[in-house]
Amino acid sequence: VKVARPRRAISRSESLQDLMATMLKYPTTLQQTLTLLTNLFPVWVILFVCVGMVRPELVTWIHGDGITFLVAATMVFTGMTLNIEDFVQVLKNPGQVSMGCICQYTLMPFLAYLISRLLKLPADIAAGLILLGSCPGGTSSNLIT
Image (cartoon, rainbow, N blue to C red; front, side, top):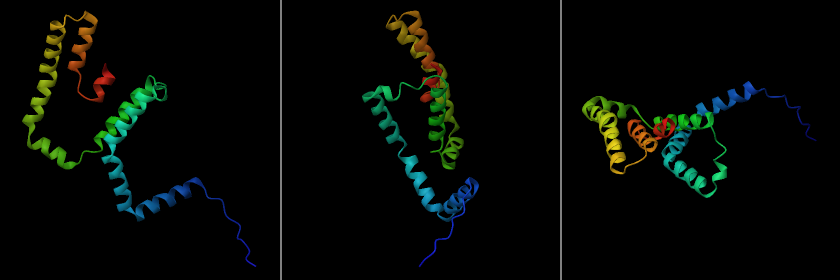
């Protein structure tokens, strides 16, 4: 007859330590998993856009600070896809980065102004278009405007 030993309660800190120890034992598995999740980032974006288009009620509950947090998280996760080589390339070709900045803050607002004049947009819509043309691209322009 086998007698079961009484189990001792495991504290949260012990279970966290066990988890960390396990993760350190398998760094390649963790790295591979994180790399896979990072590489699938465009898939996650497309998936959630589709969910929002098909079932908007699943995403319209997000308001105010929630939107700010999610945009910030998106920018952080996007930044996590960068590596040292990306920064080295920027330092090797500063002219390209400078040209991008110059175009972003001169050409883009000018083109937005020109389009608003050509389309004879109302002043409030024209101001929004020019503001959008003045903002950095990507998710931060959505946050700013």
